[in-house]
Length: 216
Image 1 (cartoon, helix red, strand yellow):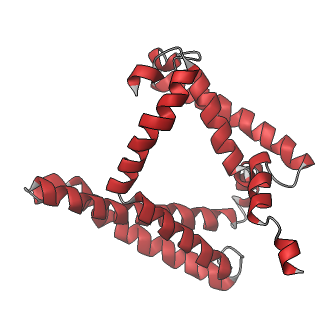
Image 2 (image 1 turned 135 degrees about the vertical axis):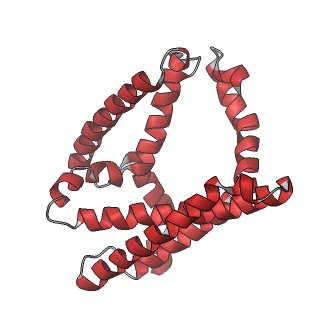
Image 3 (image 1 turned 135 degrees about the horizontal axis):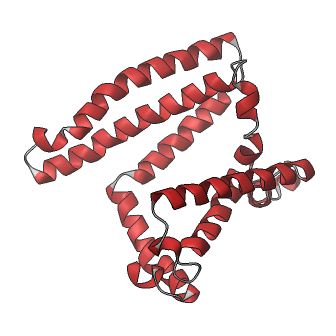
């Protein structure tokens, strides 16, 4: 990847990402069980939506409190095991397989900590107004993901400004902060004039394509 990522050719970068990059992503995701993770998280979100777990009521509040407590308690020993895997298992083959499985449980527990914590904070009187400010960004998550990838590549890759050679931790943090603020303003403006983000609108139309005709 370093051969084209650091070069000054946009076409070489695109070609590399579509060939070498895609093969690397496929293999890494397969080796780390990410395809099963994606499917599991999709089902998790589907069931959560059907059960209306994000609607705010007393029952859901208790659910998210229990989810936060259980996942937080589970995360502590899981992360301790994760950091001690090298000392616990001598065999490299067994350790690698065990690490993938253990890391999956560690990550899912931490994800539930973040999710349940955010849901509880969002519906609290103190934090609701603060967190609600970020709603326009959340409604355009797909568009933002692609937009920030394009902007980030243009800033850091060799075909763009090539700042990978100069931007260490502090400059990178400041660049990210500026991009986050710009993204928020753009999302807020877009949300005031459109129901969905640009890519969200395309995704919505593709999902429900021809559904009305089939229904009739």
